[in-house]
Image (cartoon, rainbow, N blue to C red):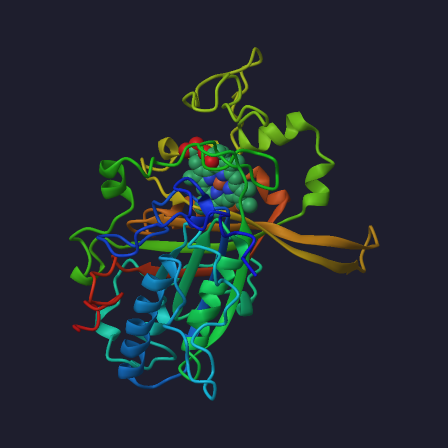
Length: 398
Ligand SMILES: C=CC1=C(C)c2cc3[nH]c(cc4nc(cc5[nH]c(cc1n2)c(C)c5CCC(=O)O)C(CCC(=O)O)=C4C)c(C)c3C=C
Ligand SMILES: [Fe+2]
């Protein structure tokens, strides 16, 4: 039977997002400045092998598989002998590439773990790949944090997205274990800023990924670090739970004060249009800041952070519900959403990007009444692979 996604005439239509193809090979990895697709699956893995060769072979195989998957092919060639496990689980057959990108990263544990230099890489850890400090209010869950290797798939199709990570995890059998995985989504009309689960446009004041000068200044690693990271970037992941039930009881005017932006237009408070500039000096008739002192945008914008900018590429998540009991007054028991934001930020150096901005937000942001950081990780995302080579080849001198 024909797949419901296969076009009736048998040839993909050029504009059909189901058949869109994003380049895999190139100077930079895909999925960083790529316009955000509708679905993501992020995962972190712990390496269990003690052999450097295993890691190199895995990265070679992952690179080849990712190149195939992003072209809409199976992870490894089919068919395979009936008496062997399949080289692809099959649920994405005929679905098209759906604009799939696959982005790989290296966590601190690849370089040293429990004081051991497992793969002869300890001396190659970039200074920018710091262990993140504990931030005010953090309630991190170890099983949802950290990881030696990072994989992010993004595409226009949920099934294609999960399929990609699932194939890579399967190929690592015996060499690594999945530490955590997280699905996310993002809906918005093409070309417009998508809204997060708090109902606000999220991403408006990002540095434009279409501006190479800005990307070179703030996102792509340059000559300041190891040569193997040049043209790569550093990703900070935070799983941020949002108490939507609480948020939904707030007056819209208060919600706008929390962010410092109008809810429906996305404009800065006091302005008309989404992309109007923030005026941090604007005051109301009583002399109060129009964009409140502890609002999210005032605290995080470049003007109050030594000019520093990060590239946010976040997704919403919705992981069903949990039952909570509080045994102190006001005593209550209720079922609450386990939903929030998969916060992902790319930057040239987290020591000047995410860390100082989040130090401030964690202490002062009005939004903290509604959000709790429960997962955290940091990864070095190496540059893109050259055809015939593999992701991270320069790190392994291969
Ligand atoms: C440390 C970095 C940040 C964390 C953590 C963070 C969490 C977070 N943010 C939103 C929603 C919005 N963020 C917005 C702007 C914004 N956020 C950060 C950084 C962090 N956010 C920055 C640097 C900026 C840009 C500020 C500016 O220059 O104006 C906005 C406004 C619209 C926009 O520009 O994107 C929203 C909305 C949530 C929901 C959240 C955690 C749950
Ligand atoms: Fe934000």
